[in-house]
Length: 225
Image 1: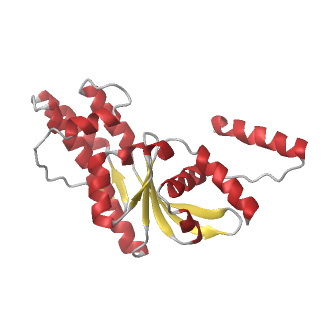
Image 2: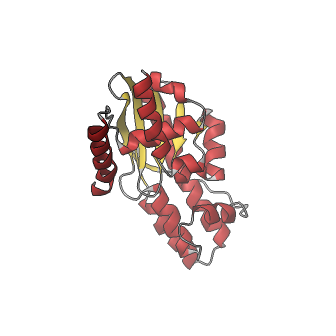
Image 3: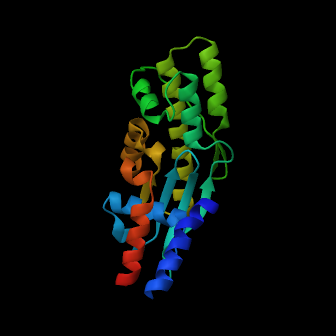
């Protein structure tokens, strides 16, 4: 994507002018390294693990393995087939009159609900489908159900999909360590539930939204190796 080439062009020019080595990494590499640093698991770059990057533009599960050339190598093993988790959260939040981006306010609103839901996530293999969340929340709103209940249904639906995907991947690849990153994973309900069930690690919100720290770390690790 053009927005990712600006940094690469600047780095290439600086490396040429100052006769310095240049190390390239992907956008996803940066997010994963930042997440590992945030939760104190940077040593995982030397082992196999599963990582989830869940945000407004990404709902991906990655199998990550050590790589001598690029520190580690992430492979996409599951994703959303349609709507991304952050899109579902923001669309439902705006529907309820919350400010965009709506993640934090939707979280607070959902905590006011005492409703209980039995949610069956839609999966194809390990890939999930999230488009139905928005449709169901629209129907709840039309029926006049409390906004707090709608918010909780939305969040628990995202959580159920991530939970089901995690279960399938662990059955397929074995009991691997788990790390969750991305703005959606800072939600208190989702992080508490998945953290308790899987003993997973979670990146702090400030290290989930920007991969710059991860890119810097990878450059340092490459030079230090």
